[in-house]
Length: 98
Image (cartoon, rainbow, N blue to C red):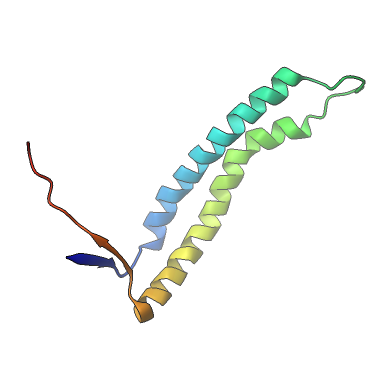
């Protein structure tokens, strides 16, 4: 038997996805930041470009801010579309205790 998600609560979804976006941003930014720090200034460069380092530090926050803006808009669009075409269908199954 299928079940449909007829509405998504925008604020609750925003809280969850903003934290997820921050974690994803940190997961991508951390190795890039480490590589930037390990590589150091390029040969022949007179000064180090700190913009790259600050970008990698800010990246998780930028991801979270974008989630904070885009997720409520996405939930609103989903809720409007779901009224006319139905929500996403999924199947629930009882878990057996074994």
